[in-house]
Length: 181
Image 1: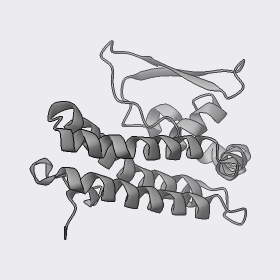
Image 2 (image 1 turned 60 degrees about the horizontal axis):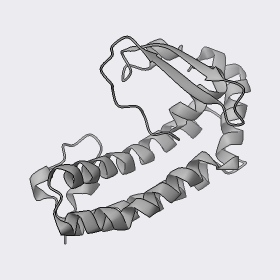
Image 3 (image 1 turned 90 degrees about the horizontal axis):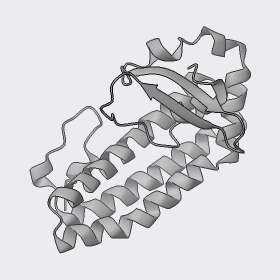
């Protein structure tokens, strides 16, 4: 296996026809290792709590993982061969564990809090103009009665749209800032 289509650069199209079940597990494992490494580096106490040092690297590395996982999930849903299902099911616990690890990462959370409290945070554009990927969002509110704040998104359109991964940096900042990012 010389080239894995699931490891294509984020700005390149994925060749769905070239993806085989044996591509899924190595790609997901490599992307999980890369994501953990970047998050551990970013969450180090000496890392400045700035958008460029914190959010951009985590968004970049996690976008590659979530795209590959989304493609694997899509293929599992539409092709659903025993080999594909087996590869997907072997990766599911690893992806679930990573998502939980990100959401509970104390160092990452502390950086989010410091970023939200920093003077530079007020210079960031408001949520509505900064997020072209969510054109139908009309309001974001945080339920403060939860131990971990919960984000409620109100949409203009009744048609469901994909949300960012539950523990993406954008989602975590939305929790901290009542939707203003």
